[in-house]
Image 1: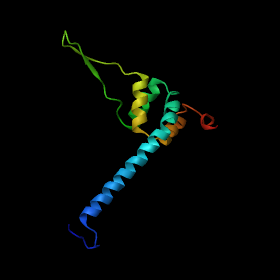
Image 2: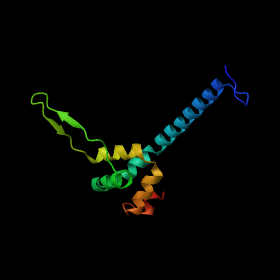
Image 3: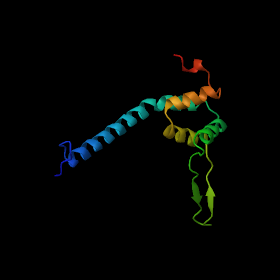
Length: 116
């Protein structure tokens, strides 16, 4: 085991770095699940076109296009993308605060929407 100039071993530093990363991931997961229903509730107010615009304006891309290959003809077709595809994509990509900010900025909902 090697020691650095602060008297800590490099194994200790690696362990604390791994622990720090795990804690950050746990925190991100907790926030994701805490915000999940709120994200879905607000995104359901968007039209499909507004969801597409949000993806393009903020990320420059949308959900990945899926393909279907017909086993008989061997032809591949693009599967259509639905409102739910965009909602799930945005839920994964953005925090609630960003979705709320965008919805207010684009007048998709008013501030009264967020009052209880």
